[in-house]
Image (cartoon, rainbow, N blue to C red):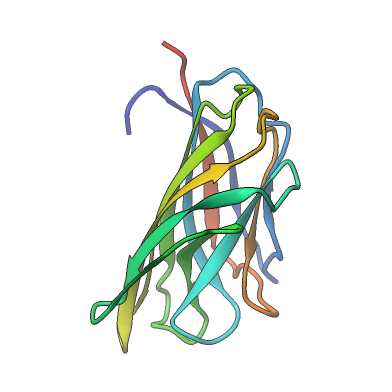
Length: 171
């Protein structure tokens, strides 16, 4: 990883799981933010979406997504909430976690915020899924809190799921 990435915070889910992963008090001292996520969630299925909220707001998102599962592709618009395919369900291949990268440029500016995500979930028994999103958060507030929540019901992040928040240094 480039030396411009500075780790701000990291969360590893402990025994018993967690309903959310939350980064709060994010300083406005960087140019961009990056989240690296490795997740497994309770529930059954092929892949679970993870929802994102900024500053405890889960609305005002618009954008496009493109995804696939090895045999078919899906795409669409609008994205009304920011979700990414990334988590692997509990009934998927043992000890396999989904992964994602979330990139948020100019997060502290007084402009609308763009967000791009790349997430993958795998189940060796049936398929793997990958999805990309290009999203706009129509809000001018600086992002100082990010909350990640499994979008399955009910569902929690399982033990050993991790999320690390990085700031990218101003040049």
